[in-house]
Image 1 (cartoon, one colour):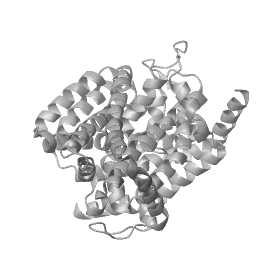
Image 2 (cartoon, one colour):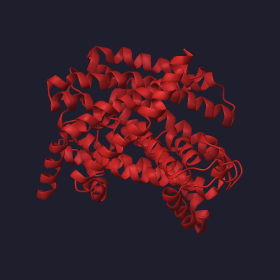
Image 3 (cartoon, helix red, strand yellow):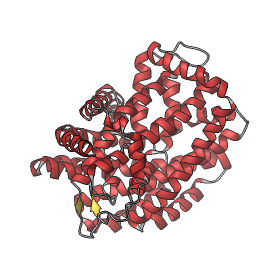
Image 4 (cartoon, one colour):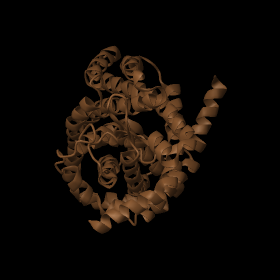
Length: 446
């Protein structure tokens, strides 16, 4: 078992979340950005207009485009935005934040393409629900001979969800509530399982309705708290941005408890944590966007790409700025403890509430969003008969996660999550000419 764990750790660190995967994700994003002629960045205002446009006349789909995006964000805005950013800065220095921005900007083209293909190649299942995602655009876009590649994605997505989207998240909530307010793990687990059951047993429509209300609320809470910190130290903002950009290209010298970081370390941790947070290229978000009441792939693509913008450019930046401005990244702290201490530097005790409530909301919504992702993957493999048994099993796994040590589960889920990206990136590259042509044709007519 020890040797297996060592091998999986090496595989995870050096291959699947090492340079090869980070390069593949980055190069794919750059290629798609160039092929789209920068439209994924230039059309951000257009995407927001489409997001809030009234589409009651469109009946094809299960949830509104807004709720589709909120469902996707419920899964992506998670502990990575709080603890993940802090880890990136602690390991790669302030420059890691800059490389998060870079991977997010090219990742928007990846997310656009995923959302586009999700609508273009989705299907209607036996229950009349719209289903889609990488497994469907691989099968329907690349042809039946490639269906095995979609099956691999579905297997990885089904299994990864129980780790990265369920037990690991409930464990994070239980740990945060225990440290923050002394609430025992079994109590947290029981409450989460009950609330999750009330939502998940209602399917995508109820998930979308809850996500549409809860995600904006939690984002407003966390971003608002961060903005208060930044505004009260507004004179330090220029210096913080200078530090981030300078360290991105010159590395960071050892100081205090910080061991120092080269430019490569800043790139590696910034890109890795950025991708882990916004999931651009992993193929999860298009599963939610396939359920949108939208008949136009381009329109849903522009909405889909906003997920990366909101997750990384807004939420992760707030965390990064607070940490850099506090100066506590030099102390050797990391993860949620560093983010808590950074917020605490403004007012003692303030950080505990921001981080505890933030992690609780972010992690719980991740459980909701990933339940839909994994359920659709399981349905692709076994048909609609698996839906109700899957939901019961998913709900039962929530309290289990609060009571266990999940280091190995986290490692395995991390590997499966990365493996999801391989079939998805292949499909994005193969189908990119179609994405480019239809997108450019659309905006020429607009």
